[in-house]
Length: 122
Image (tube, rainbow, N blue to C red; front, side, top):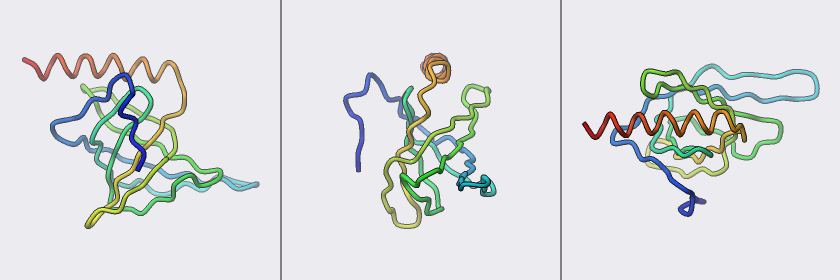
């Protein structure tokens, strides 16, 4: 399991944040999207996050992507990216997710986490 402990910061939530995901698989002719599945976000950084789900999703699959959607500070987040590692738990799977390298989404995550942190200190 790869975990970037040297990252500038990684915010761990006191309670997991409920999320939904859509898994997209592309071939030469079309894109196949899965139905939405439930996931639970454990922690987040500007570059990615860690989540668990009961679904056994492929990692590093060619021509595949995952879109995670969740609410943070009453704002909808939609993060496209890829699963980079997976660990089997008792009844679910734990995943490492790397977001697409969008400067705007990284900045938005930082701002929302600052706001979330301030609200939780009060």
